[in-house]
Image (cartoon, rainbow, N blue to C red; front, side):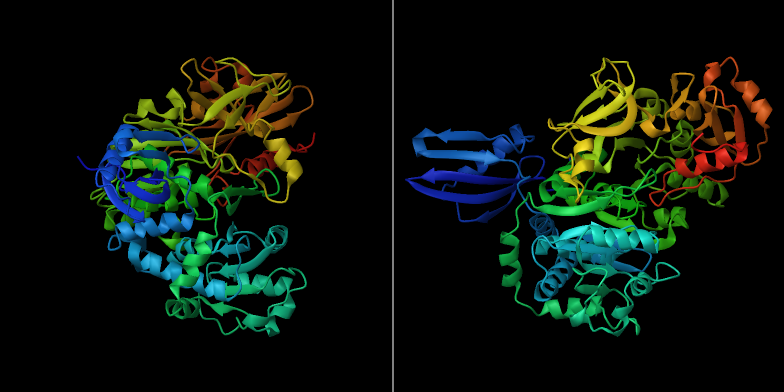
Length: 631
């Protein structure tokens, strides 16, 4: 039987032998077989075999626990801890050393492919150039790129220098981009040109006109005093103030690797590694800070839940600046040692063709992606012929069960993993693996991941609630963020002194401990003192044979507080009127949950992360009803 995960455990071994202390590292695969050792020879021929057997017997040891092996007859004492005490640079290099010839990246947008060995060489070279240019441990380095091979190389390089990745949304406008660059104390910024009609370098020039006349080694910006380095991926005559990405790679290839090794030894697994900004659809984006150890632990949790193997071909549709993209896709794929496939700025365009051509076995994305995939299969003369998808991973928003049915019955998908999480939780919280449509999380709930504690608290009193009672979902785990960057008050409101993260989501726990997600606290509709879950109404509307999807919001009402307003997208070739659909609801759902008004749409507004933008829908609903949002 093939190993689910290739080389999943790195174990540090410290022991005393004849009064002399020694330390080494061992790597085991998921079957407990030793695949590599590092450091000084252990001096006992039977030691590795004993540790391999121990690792096989106890493969899931917590990073906070230790266990010992006593060999009295050989006067040997060992203490062993789990792999999480590792930096991302070490994590990346170990993967490359184990399978240097295996294909790591397939950038279909640019026609570029890299093996794990090439990925290591390129990231090492870029890291060395960054060190030469003055990047220090803890420096904040912004990355403004779409899904491309340069994005992965850049982020690996930053981690190896000890810098902190600042993930920035490529869709941000000038004002928000300026605020985020300033608030995160950015020292360097990587830009991929050509991904927007107005390039991000041009946006920088608008904020800092003085940059137009500066050279790469003399960058000095009044608006961003800490900014010292600008790097662009494409040659650009107007980029006089920027270093060229390819030239930095070329320069780094000839530099002394010992410089990088020395820097990497200075980095702690608990140093800040990345800042991922929340989507910001309900307010100003906040920078979630996660450390090296948290990212690695999260990557392995995703690998295990997705049952990834080194033979998978993993298509990621989520942007690399969001947690589902950078952790749930990029890092998870690297951890498993498989091939990560993406198509740059094409979005869902040509998704079916790419999945077929690249023989992808896993697809990860938000529900919008699966709507588009089913539409493409419907239009394609060949249908879904040639698809090899064994697993679809859905996250970011609830997905209609009808979509799951379509994926399984029309596209032949074997399993669907529904994940519930949020960036602040690292991001994984719970999931549900379905092998039939009726097993989906909408109907059966999600099981918390190992090491994740969940409780439900009353939205008004803050007290803990029993099973079956809806309230705010609270989470505690190793993956919960360190902080919101430079926002101590926001951090204190989000995470209490006991480590509980207040998610802002509404849900309940079943008697079996499964979690049922009902929606965002801010999206909850309060009608005459009764709480109404938009998700519940949406799922109900999708049961009608003519309805493809629905999005429900609350609009202000002087008498009842809020009324239910539904936006509905119909299936192709189907027609139904507002009154007819409202009549269909009567007697099947509580009267207070029946929409007072329904607006039919061809598409829903979505955020950069692919989620339906409820904030925009609420504005539209209020405008249609002639009601102020603040009524």
